[in-house]
Structures are given as structure tokens and as C-alpha cells.
Length: 203
Length: 161
Image 1 (tube, each protein chain N blue to C red):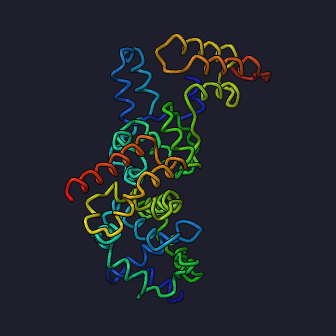
Image 2: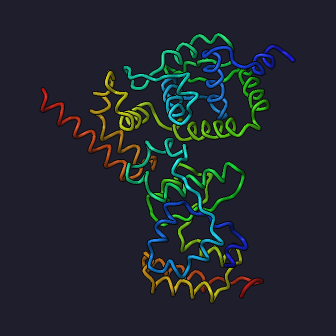
Image 3: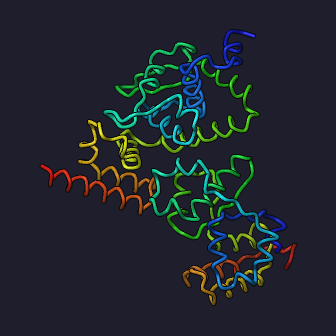
């Protein structure tokens, strides 16, 4: 048994290790890179909404780009327990995140170890679904959907204005691609207009 | 009844509640209780994953339960066929959950004849006639087109014809 096997068989020692394991699971849930750091952050946020353990270990707070976690950001940028399990690839300014071969091995070991546990399998299925649904969105589409759905996290957003300004265009693009329903489109348009009205009446 | 020999028939609690409200429910109550599996999707956590994509109103509907059940069974390596008559729900599945098979009731009936060999030709045409006379929401031209398709279909009916 090598170092990796030993590490993942142990009960995680602290929250950072748990967070790093979840990052590996999210990355491994689909055989393609996560399109950006923003995607990774928001996908983990959505997952935290349905997983109590993740909610406990990765608390999200309102920040410049909506829901944000310091712990998650630190873990992505400076992993302590599983260094070099993933890499951030700069693709012309766009930063994709992908598992390295070492990371893939850790992922496979985690699946082998815990795959028979129903909670683990169900979490993995949900991570896969999240990746399938949210990876396809561009950053503006991702933000408008997260901002609209979780307004409690946008109080400090610095880019809300720009998202609202392009609101109709972004919503139209989502509708055209069939990602959102017409009723959802109407809801977003109503929200965008009411935000502008409110802002205008307050200024 | 013969459909049940080939398929497990599963509905969400919300769909059951709608059926219970129907005036004809007493006639089918025993059948439903004996043959239909009912799942309560109220606490399905996957609903949250879908929340950003559908309206608040749609998220509470029985159609979302059908989608959640479809996702559940698909991931259990079964081959669910989702019956969704509302266009928004069907379109959502077709565009976003491409691994799932989704059909309208009328198309499912056609396939019970053409693909699954559950119904015979005359039987299928009779079902469409009954649907036209009932309160089932379906456009006349759709039924006519399906009836033509069935009438023009030459196949060996080795079962139930």
C-alpha cells in the first residue's frame, strides 16, 4: 500500500483534508476539466446546498462574485494533504481545473474504498449531475442563475451591476439553448427589471 | 394491465394527489393501489440542483417529481421512460438530461404498439378514439397523425393482436 492508499483509508484529520477530498470528487465526477475556478466554486456551493457535511466543512458567505468560501479557495490554490492532485491550466486567460494522473488515482481509490456506501454513491451521482448541468454554462450564465436563485449571497457582489445590465441578453441565451424554461426566463426578466427600477428610484 | 407486464409503473406523490382528485378515482382506486408504485419526492435533494433552471412554480409540480424519479432510476442502471405531457418539462429533459428517454402519453401508446408489442393495431386505434372523446388534453391533429402512422404500419403482430 502506498502513501495515497494509506492517506485515504484514514479518517480525515481536519477540515482541510475533507475539503480537498471533495474537490477531488467533484473533479473526478466527470471525465473533463471544470471550465473555471468560478465554476468549481459555484458547483461546490450547489452541492453544499444538498449535503450537510459539505455545508459544515465549506461555509459559503456573500462576496464579490456571490457565494464564496475562503477555505475552498485556499484548498484549491494551496492543497496541503493532496498536493499535485489537480492542476490549474491557463487557457488564454481562462483557468480550467483538471485532475492530474495522481489525482485520478486518488479519485479511483476513494471510489473503490467507499463506493459501496450508499451516501457516498449518491453524493458522487449528484456531483456528476451538477457537473453535467453547470459545466455547460458560461460564467455570466452561471452567475445570473446563482444570483437569481440565491439572492442572499449577492449583497456584496461587485459584478451584479454588469450582470443586471446584460440581464436580458444572458437570459435570452439561456432560453435559446433550452437550459432554462420559458417561465424561468420570465422570472429572471422580471427580477432584472425590478432591480433596475428599484435602483433608479433610489438614485 | 398488459403494460404492467412489461413496465413498472411509478408515479410521484403529487401525481397521485391529482389522480385522487379525479371524479373517476373510485373506479381505478384498487387498480392504482395494487399496481402502481408511489414515491414521495418531497425531500429529494436533487430538486435543489434543478432549482436554478426552472421557475418556482414549476419546481413544485408533479412533472419535476417525474424528472427526479427518472434521474434516480437511471442512476440505478434501470431504463426509465418518462411520460411527460407538458411541453416545458419534456423540452427541459430533452435539452438538459439527454440520457433520459421522455415521451408524451400518446407517443408512449404508439410505441406500445410499434416498439414494445404490447398492444395490437386495432386496440391502439381504439385507445386513440377514446382519448379524443375524453377530457385528455391532446390536439386533434396530433391524434389524427398518430392514427395514420399506426394504420400505415405493416408489422407482424406476434402478441395480443
